[in-house]
Length: 153
Image 1: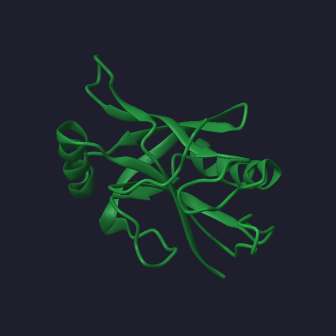
Image 2: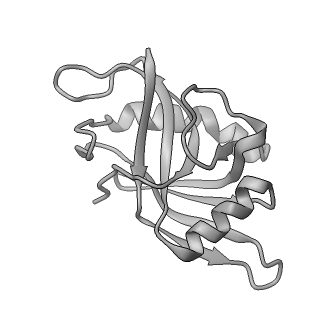
Image 3: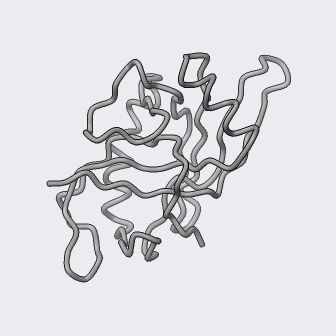
């Protein structure tokens, strides 16, 4: 299996006026759509994997990094976001991630305010010759990145 990443620019930055917390809100992943990496995720595979990470969202431990690491493990020193909500709308998975007050989270806040960042899924799996991600796909998390490939509908 290899590391598979997919990215999207289709999110907005929201600030909670009470707490001053910042959130990335928008499309985190898309199913049944060829992205810039020429890959397609079947909806049933993405739904299965989102179901697996939902418990981590509920337990407040679905962490994401600033940038994609070269390996699948989440490095605590690089954590910038925590996914707080996930919801399907058609073939698009909308999410909300809190940008944290960690060293990498503070860098992310500046980068998001000053330019365009993306949200990107990170997982392990293989891709068939037809471009479809295979059944062995395992979703790990979403990260904030500078080079998205997702093409949401």
